[in-house]
Image 1 (spheres, rainbow, N blue to C red):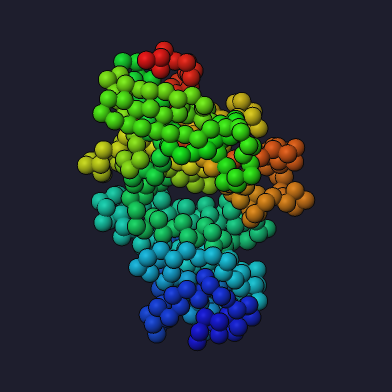
Image 2 (image 1 turned 180 degrees about the horizontal axis):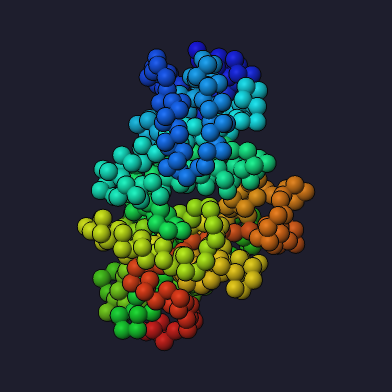
Length: 426
């Protein structure tokens, strides 16, 4: 059966791209017997590791039986499972069918069954890395968070997974990636292009923007060139030699500055640059962002990777997310947990489209539909009020250096900050 034969048999529209991708490769490896993720002993054990309760057993059992008894559905499920976890290279799932004609309201369980099979793959990856099994199982609970905090929220409490979430799971099976407390981290070279310096005497930290970035008059970046006004803003340059670094300042509150400085390397040490190993942070769904929880997770991450990856000279944690939009400091109350977190970090601007990351808030693709967007939480209501008043949404990035984690809580980057710092006067 071809991919479109299968889709036709399931009452779904023909596919022209993503479902068809690598179909012959997966079907050549289709087992003749029962598929591992559909065996009750397996999915029961895996859902326990992911901290689901037994209330999910009914939907899981019904859906597994329907898949096993329908050859077209079985072939599509194998293709999903193979693409998600077994293919030699990552092959993200996109715009796959909801399968409502064959599975009704339990179409999302089809994807959840495949996601639960991530458990033994994570266990194997952690064994390879020498990470503790307990950490593997703690990380596995992300499957439940994707279900409870996203899919259930958007589907009247029914269990399942969105395809946009299921793709993320492969990261846990291949990378040095672990959940520690409230946050998740993986060790990789930093893709960020800014350069960070610390003053050798005072400890003051400044970041210089990457070259060739076009900032608007307010110090922000855009993906749409129409957002820039003629004759306003600036384009950055950066130069580094054996004695000095020259570039444009990034304000730790999350914007660029039209201020070029030259730092003498006799006074300033380069502590972070593109390609350096860092902990890239992911903020999983599933709970508050209290200052203590964030601090404890960051400290645990520093200690964990120093213990289990001792040969990696990691100096910082970095991340890009809607959560690091400095707009939140004007939208949310001053004492909101997210704002308390932002003030402890060095924020930096990212090119914004106006819709970055808002799916996680509203579970809507593309531009927000004000008529249908949920207004259940104060965060949703405040962001919608900002957008309805004509505001342009942007996301952002951050870093925090390992050497500054012990001073978490003191706003180490913002305290006394000014573009006219004495250290910058040369």
